[in-house]
Each structure stands twice: as structure tokens, then as C-alpha cells.
Amino acid sequence: MSNVPIEPDSSRPVFAIVIVAAGSGERLGYGMPKAKVPLGGEPMLVHALRVAAASGVARKIYVAVPRGDEELRRICAGAAEALPEGSPTVSCVDGGATRSDSVRSVLGQLDAGITAVLVHDAARALTPDSVFHRVAHAIRQGAKAVIPAIPVVDTVKTVASSESADAAVAPEIVVGTTPRERLRAVQTPQGFDLATLREAHHAAGLFTDAQAAAVTDDAMLVESLGIPVHVVPGSAHSLKITTPTDLLIAEALLAGPRAPRWVEG
Ligand code: CTP
Ligand code: MG
Picture 1 (cartoon, helix red, strand yellow):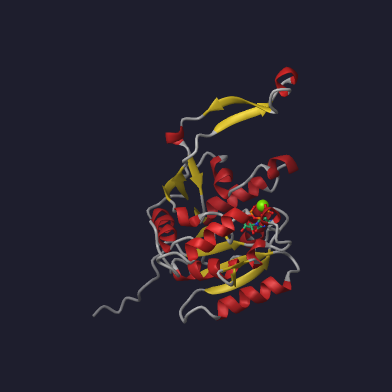
Picture 2 (cartoon, helix red, strand yellow):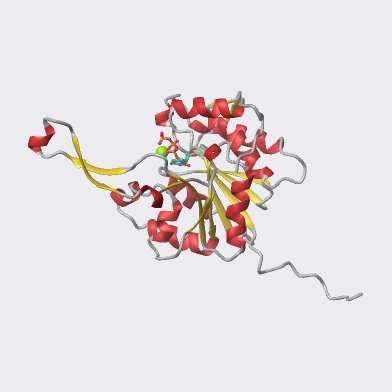
């Protein structure tokens, strides 16, 4: 037998999952952060944390909550304690004013040794394990950035405000139609090599307010660096619970024929 010590495999990424849960949930209209809104009788964050932990991908999970929201911190700590033995440790940190700010806040607090990050919306509380696995696999294969996405079922058009004469007819007018075959609806978790995500967020930290407001995911920031963003299949069950209709759909999925944990794609 060889006495050569076994070194950790430095070529394999060490993942953290970042769950952003620091939004206010305006569009859902519950008057509270969405992460606290019940889904199947439990706060949405509890579902998101459980699925992220069960994926087995991450060494550690960070949850960004609204600054000063002690109740959500308690929910997070309680959910972390209830995870099965051997689950990743969970840290709850203050988020920021925008989703990007929340991600940046976590990036400033990551443990040494983490080399890759999956950024996940707490609002995608029902994302199947398989999506975490596909994203992590692509990072292990050498991708610097990976997003899960699904085909768009609607025809999508770009519009502009109607000029004065047309405005009497309708408020907007079509200016283009992108072929639907090439359109994808993008989900989370989005996976990144940590150095790449840091570089992207460093650049975004210097944006004007208008530029910052236009940023809706992390992949956009990586795209602007000219780094390829790879696409793997997402899942219909990974819908972002944004409106009351989405919450109804999520409740139905949770209570559906293969409840409590069906897995689709
Ligand atoms: N998020 C965050 N910090 C913010 C804003 C959003 O961590 N300052 C998180 C949300 O908690 C959510 C995810 O980013 O999990 C996606 O954002 P969205 O669906 O827009 O959630 P909210 O911003 O909470 O909802 P709304 O825009 O309707 O207020
Ligand atoms: Mg929002």
C-alpha cells in the first residue's frame, strides 16, 4: 500500500449554493417578503432550502434575506436545523436593495475553498434536483457559466409606445418578432465558476441606477464580459412564483398526483 497522502482533487469545483430571498414580493401582493409566504403550509424559503440541500451539490448554502428581517432569519435557521444529518451548513446573510446587490452581499462572505457557485431564487421553491445536477455537471465539465432554460411556448414580440396617431388606436405597436425556436425562458439555479461571477459582479457594481435596474439575472453580467454562457434543460416545475396565479400553480404541483415530491425532467 502506498503511503502517499490523498490530496483533495483540486480540479473538482467546490460548490456553494446562494439562495436569494431578500426581495419584497410586491407582485405576489401578500404584504411580506415572498420567502415567507406559505406554500403547502410552509414558507417558500423552507421548500427552496430543502431542495437545494437535498441536491447534494453544495458544501455550503448561503441565504440572503432582507436586512433586519429577524423572522425570516429564524425561519431559515429552523429549516437548516431540520435538514437531515450530513446536509450542507447554512448561513443566513443580509441581502441588498436589488437581486444583484443580494448576490454581491453573499459573494463578499463566502468561505475560503469555494470555487463555484449556484445562484438560486427562493421564489423557485419547487426546482427539481435534476436541474441542480445538470447545472453542476456542466460546471464540472469546464463551463464558466451555465443556465437552465425551457423553450418559450408563446410567440414573443418587441413593442414600442405608439406614436400620436396610432396611440388613439392602441397604446403600443409591434416592432419585431424573434423566431420562437431560438427563444428560451431562463431559470435558476445558474452556475458559475466563482472567479467569473466575481469579475461579472465587480463590473456591475459600477453600473448606473438605470443599468442596474435592467439586470435581471447573473448570466447577463457574464454575457457582458464576453464569456460563453451554456444552456442546459430547465423544468416547468421550476417556475418562479411571482404572481398569485403562479402560487396557485405551485400549490397544485405540490398537491399533484406525485406529491409531495414529484420529479419532472
Ligand atoms: N431578491 C433578492 N434581493 C432583492 C430582490 C430580489 O434576494 N433585493 C430575490 C427574491 O427574493 C427572489 C429572487 O430574487 O427569490 C427573484 O426576484 P423576484 O421574483 O423579483 O422577487 P421579489 O423581488 O421579491 O418580487 P417583486 O419583484 O414582485 O417584488
Ligand atoms: Mg423583484
